[in-house]
Image (cartoon, rainbow, N blue to C red; front, side, top):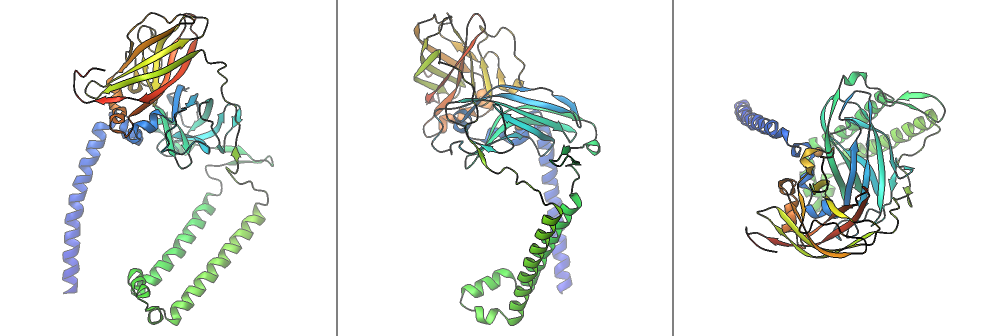
Length: 428
Ligand SMILES: [Cu+2]
């Protein structure tokens, strides 16, 4: 009877597994069908619009290569502006870490810099400042991957910058990661101490398994938990249980001491990784701000994917200026009157006709002008920035770039609450 019960169970399970398998296959097909869009990469669009627009404004991001062989290096460089209106809901970047957003260690970080400082560790960013960064990456696993710059903010989570498809060719078996230690010797980090790492982890996994298995065999962990909670611990916990617990505790402590002493003896000189916090790292000195822009309200038309903002712009510089670009959340909206050629940037983030100005004449030196700037492109919606319409305060943010005839670029931060419009034909 018991056997037939198990047989039935096995049959039911296999039928269920079959169904799950077909659902799984359908999911794989769906995933492959939509693999052409970068959303399949890391879910970068799932972060809230306000978080991507009003925390870190990425610009001048460059990937030195988009095709490389295993062991080949590339640089990911650019600038980041720390938005002044950093949302209250997100922890300030007082403890931040420069990283690369990629599906696992397909490219490894050889070095990273913010300003002149090497940043293998946590650093502090100041609100309102701009920073240069550089990450040197080395190709490890062949394939086609979406590679982003990313800054991890303690208690704020990872804030992802724009991503680019990078193709890695070759064989992972050829990958090496040699590093020279302080004592002059060279090791390959890819394989260094790997047997020891596996051995140590499996030993503790086995110990945990023994622990769980023992209590599972003693009427199960949850049932025992209930009994103890019901005040029956004296009936529940036997002398044998206590002995087992004691032996297990003593042997784990002894193992810990033994391995610790052993590691200390074998590697007497070690440095902890990522310890400490770098403060006061150098930021980009933009000098006295040439342009000021005060925000005079705006709207976002959900059906038209159109963000309209009223700005009062003052040009305190020596040259006339034209509004050329608005960038937010890694997206770039360009004014085709200013950008005559298409810059090299991932297409899914570049709206080369996405920005227009109601008055295209350049703003003269010393002039203050009221302008209506319109950002309109499907990418605004595809990248789910339209979600700002559903936020509690519906605030947008980003950087506006203005250009002089000599090619000088001035930047100004803009942002503020916009009124969402859900009907076509709604006016500002
Ligand atoms: Cu991605």
